Image (cartoon, rainbow, N blue to C red; front, side, top):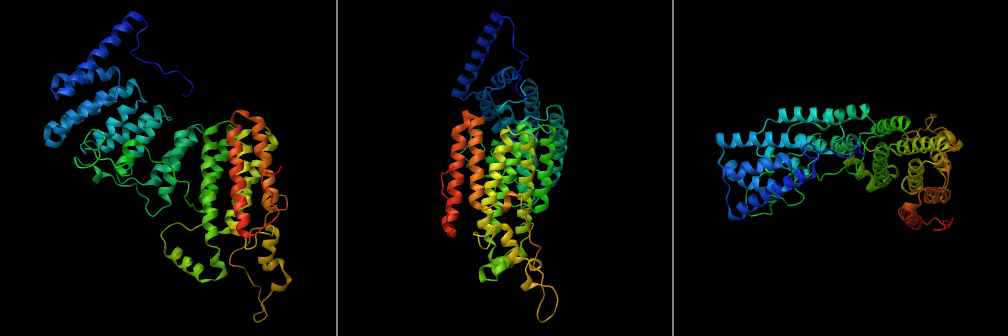
Length: 461
């Protein structure tokens, strides 16, 4: 659990005994380093390094020594390599029991598995058990993601696994974060993880990490073994997926509104919704019938990717979130997370005027009325057919009380108010809030200038 000091199984209470132990570790490490400098990799030194690592698994230099000693054995292959592989797995298992969050140990285990001599099913079973014992160990989650990249495991399967963990504990930040890695994979051209089998190499012509594996900083192998992969915030999800994910975090908010884990995930969702707004804005030409829109429609029709949400769906999602946050603030007016997220949603509501409305000077209600044949007498029927003229998709009409019914000017005023409120509630982060407000004003100001909408005075209260 977070906030608890870590206990060490081998820590001695007697200070004299502890000093002797520390001195023995220093001497043992110095001996291994001396042998490494001399190029001596015999069984005696290798065994000494394993004994030291069982006590202090954090000393990455000892792991580096073992990798250098083991590389020739792996190259040779055969029974000796299989035995060495099994021993390294046992050693890392022992070390992880001592310290389940040892970066060096997890890294070494990945290095061992990448040689292709390990039972991946057994590894999956092991990591599933580890996550049942400590479901918030992000090292274990990262290792599971790494294993998925070595198999034909689907991102949908892993997404279902993460949902089980989230449902069990809404405070499980690692499970939430896992979803940020998986959703972009599920709703991309491939539901499978990037294969990294072919990335293992022992060539000496490229940059290495000291263990014989090539690293260029961006290869699938580099990302997998270092755990550097992050969830994309440019992932365009289907509207029903956005709605389902938003509903999931709302359940978490209802359970514990002060828990930051679901709020951070919620922030990631909003970032992707913002990317969706910008992407939908690029398709405005489709409804106008110009050449660019027709070409884009053809590309999207032939794409295997999930459909981009419609403008009406995006607006409906934004209004739903604005309403939820407003209800939350009515109950807890001094809550920082809802205040911050409401500011973000209102920023997006202001941007939506420019990305989604043909005339940003119009309010959403006016814009909807101008397009909806049911709201205009001149388009109630077709002169030739005598039948109602229907728009391609039913327009979304926000309620008069919805934030989306306000003008960009009013929305920006609400954003300023929220950030000033946050500075009052949380003065230690006043710089962060001031920068966020400045960024919002700059973004909306640029859109105002581009569309020729006058009247927004940036920097005013």
